[in-house]
Figure (tube, protein in one colour):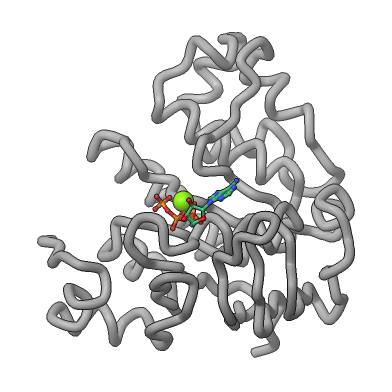
Length: 236
Ligand SMILES: Nc1ncnc2c1ncn2[C@@H]1O[C@H](COP(=O)(O)OP(=O)(O)OP(=O)(O)O)[C@@H](O)[C@H]1O
Ligand SMILES: [Mg+2]
């Protein structure tokens, strides 16, 4: 399998504050890379760096063989990266439908197709962004990114703060995106067990460095290792 997204030796941060020391990772076309790690280790900074939102001191980000390192965020989006941000960043004064149209790029993912994936959004399509539950906002954040018809979907803690039933619905949608639509993903998550189930490869970050990398199934099967890396043992 060829890697669609390749991150090589990334040293990046905010101004002089270097957060990522030397991070390398790659995702195969149609694959899902989980990025795990405790609070504040640099997971969001990694996705932000892939999107061009941080200061990169060293290293490269390559998408389908094209070096993005010097491109601004909008050019990276045009090349096929879409970010579902940790804060969701739904446009409060636009309707659900308008949120789906605002960043839309041509391709198979239309609002109608997003509604098919998340029927709840169809019911809420005329609601304003600020009239949605947290779960609906997260579905909309994923749907809005899909409507950009990206090559790679970057998801920053899509399950954070959501009730178990909603987590399950969004996890099922992500599974469908992988199995039926072969969407390539980078999934940042604190729910390590679920992220390992949804992904095929994983990295664990600690203080801006990769401290583990390998097959998700291997880490999922080694609960002692997972606990030592992430800091707690999750119960299924
Ligand atoms: N905009 C910013 N400007 C300056 N420093 C920042 C900024 N965003 C994050 N940082 C710092 O970078 C470090 C890594 O933060 P980051 O948000 O990448 O961690 P994270 O792994 O995503 O954490 P969490 O699990 O809490 O979301 C932290 O020390 C944080 O304070
Ligand atoms: Mg974060």
